[in-house]
Amino acid sequence: MMLKVIAIALTTVFLAACSSQETKTDSAEVELESGPLALTAFNESVDIDIVWRRSLGKGSGSKNIRLRPQVSGSNVYMADYNGLLLSLELSTGNKVWSQKFDQKISSGVVVVDDNLYIATQDGSLHSIDKNNGEVQWSQALSSESIAPVVADANQVFIRTIDGRLTAFDRQTGKQNWTYEAALPVLSVHGTGSPVLLQSLVITGFANGKLVAVDKELGIPRWSKRLAIPQGRSELERLVDLDGTPLIEEGVIYATAYHGKLAAIGFDGSTQWETELSSYFGPALGLGNLYITRDDDHVQAYDQLNGASVWSQPALQGRFLNQPVKHENYVVVADFEGYVHVLAQVDGEIIGRLSVRPRPLHMTLPNQPEMINWRPLRGKDFGIRSVMQSTPKGLLAYTNAGELLLLQLAN
Image (cartoon, rainbow, N blue to C red):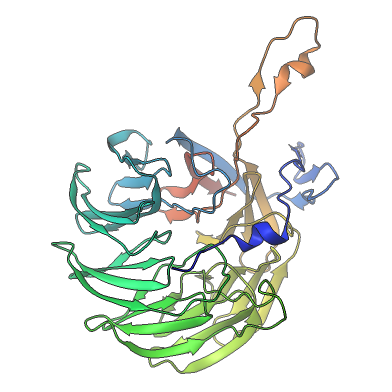
């Protein structure tokens, strides 16, 4: 089994101490203090309101685990890294039911019909009744999975960090087949979810290839290389497809680290491609593909030909997550817990909110009032998980284990 490592940790120092505080004024312009990774001023035209927030547990902290909420009907289903699975009312955040696992939850939640699917850190896949949280079956995996599963009417498909794609029977949990890709010595610690076509399951691997596997037989039908290892060191030669591909109107859009953004037909033919390095998959809106590049520039590409439409470099160095299209906006979040709203047409920043809790208030004798306010230390309030757009608002899950419902308004 190849050992996955966090390449980012080998090449960068996480600047947790370099925080910056936002100061709002009565005017439309928002200015911030200068300093390392400081946020630039912008003209505010969108307000972000917190409808509700709920602490689910301790969260994943600095671990590169991207758990995300899933909505089905009037409920939202969410797993905390430390083993808690919950069903909540989407409109209020009130708990419907909860289930506690002995193992840490490494991927999930995925809702398919009346079933939930999660994977735990001991290398197990679990099928759960979404109405009450009862486990229906559990199945051992070849290794840990950190990417949500996908499922059709008959099978569940899951990617594991040892480079395998495995299919299980939805009713019994019986393994039907497994496909294994050769892995490089070093890869980025991350895995994109597979996506489904009528007869194919599409997924990316750490060798820089996007592969289409037959859903019934588990054999490859075609593969497309989106990144070629180059350079002398293993770090320079890193190539990985960590982002989940996007399917729209008969086209597969996929990205690679140290590679390309490509539009690929269902038969594996390349329609267009452009140079790009990203850890994330694209979001789609107004005929554009919105992507967070590995340098934290948010960039829009034309869906039809891959031409650059706009680029927003103002958030460089802020460890952004994957952008999401919500209503008429593009929204990203960063390592300090700031949510940034961008205009779809030109990428201008038009809204921002810090979702970090207020600092703790401690009464110290013989100290001025300002000394009595202390930040919440030892907590990672960044947002690494992909935010989810819902009819009720935007769901965001922080690294500290808080789930929030946000609403945007002009």
